[in-house]
Image (cartoon, rainbow, N blue to C red; front, side, top):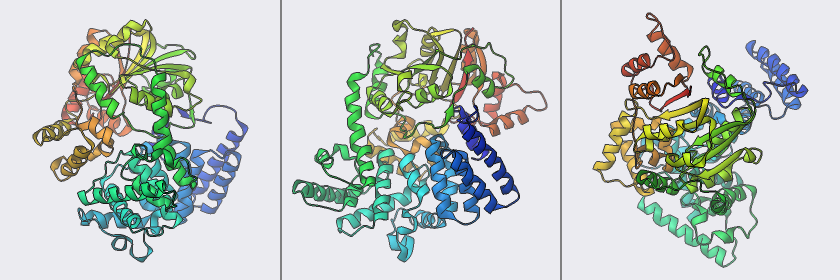
Amino acid sequence: MNRKQRRAAHKHGRPAGSIGTDPAGDQSSELIVEALEHERHRRFDEAIRAYKRALQFKRDHAEACNNLGRVLLTQGKNRDASIYFARSLALMPQLLKQYAGIRATLIALLPTLADVMQKQATAWPRQLNKDELFGEGGLAAIADDALLLHVLQSIPVQDVGLERLLTTLRRSLLADALARNKFPDAVRNFACALARQCFINEYIFATSPDEDTEVARLNRTVHDALMSDFSFDPTQLAVLAMYEPLHVLAFAPMLLDRTWTPDVDALLTQQLREPMREIELRDSIPRLTAVEDDVSLRVQQQYEENPYPRWIHAAGQVTPLPIDQYLRDQFPGQPFVPLGKIDALDVLIAGCGTGEIAIASVQKYLGAQALAVDLSLSSLSFAKRSTPAALAPRIEYAQADILQLARIGRSFDVIDCSGVLHHMADPDEGWRALLTLLRPGGFMHLGFYSEAGRRDVVAARAFITERHYRPTPNDIRRCRQQLLETPLSGLTRFSDFFTTSECRDLLFHVQEARMTIPRIKAFIDEHRLTFLGFEFEMPVLQQYRNHFAASGWSMTDLARWHEFETRYPDTFSGMYQFWIQKP
């Protein structure tokens, strides 16, 4: 892990093994210290031996895997390095959020990948064939790289260059599937990984009318083979799954009657078994309140159609902290009244979506038990299906409207409501409703859109309105491609740009309000709340300190933060993410 990755892991709680007296963990940690010393002195063979010994004591040590990959890459042993990098990410999936770093590692491991991405970027919108991209070696040059395969199956691709290359490779594989070409095992495995990527991003890659016609032909080919009980190349099925989810196909149930290779079977789990399980779970989710508000009903409909956000793996290897310690680590030196709870910490996730925040909360706060509510049963079903079994008893998922939650007669020590209230007609009304549920001395984590930070989003929404785009998959795909050819192409800085549901949330939302720091300050002052601070990466905090170095700085001075945002309007381009305490 690099320093940025360590900070990302820390936001989910300390990595497992950082606290405790596990002898194997202690021994592996000592060996990692030894290996780092060898690395510093460029004794790479000795470092490799020390990291491998550490993994003998603790096979699931993510940092040892990552560091071993780094040393192997330094020695030019790229294939082995890729295996260890992929293993590290499998053990700590939260590190996948550091997409830029992972992409850089991929490029270092696979120089061919950088080369073919550049070729396709230069030729776009013309799609190159495999020979033009790879030469005689073909797709085999990248098809079996462990890290690339893991990324494709674990997180939406979040850069235009790789998206366009994958769009081109998908088209090429479609042509091969229709020609009934023989696919090597490595190419079939890559095709399954690409199909899983397309399901993850909800088929957001560009298509053409001719391509759609070819997909329909492939659909008929696979259907006819199944109906006639004929054998067919499973890569044809994988290619079909690159264009539409298998669970929507008329012949989908018949796929489960056959025996498949592990890669194809994993594809069927993603695109058939898991969606079927979510449908089964809908009736098990309690309805705590009615949903009657007009805006709430429109927002509910959007998230029924497009559950948000899309995610694959819960964080791994997290050791929970008492909430007081967590906040002290987040805001060192900032005074607050300790809650003093290390068990039975009652947490409300207000607007839990697909469950990622609820799961992270019970992982990182010691003794946390959560009520996670949302308007959308589709999102809640995704959440319930995706929650790790070990955490499921600590999370209660339910359908409810925040505006009516006071009726359930419960109160909470911690409330998390990030990215939710700005989708209400009156965000202040929702904030006030939540305050009535927060116990005295309780903490609340909030996230609001910034008026200054979303200037390009507002412009894109105007672009969409002028061109009469609708929030349908086809229009979202077409709109994205047009936006990439305009000055608004900077929207790619948002990871939400790269999946259908999240792009709809970003640019096509039925209700969006934006806040300013003075408005947040007025609400905090009116309700006599204590502002603990904004959540930031260290470079932003350092920039803030430098800006006010001559006049003195305070992390909790909202007037200063408003001045800073006025000077640097992209500071809160994601959201205002902050904590408050109720008196």
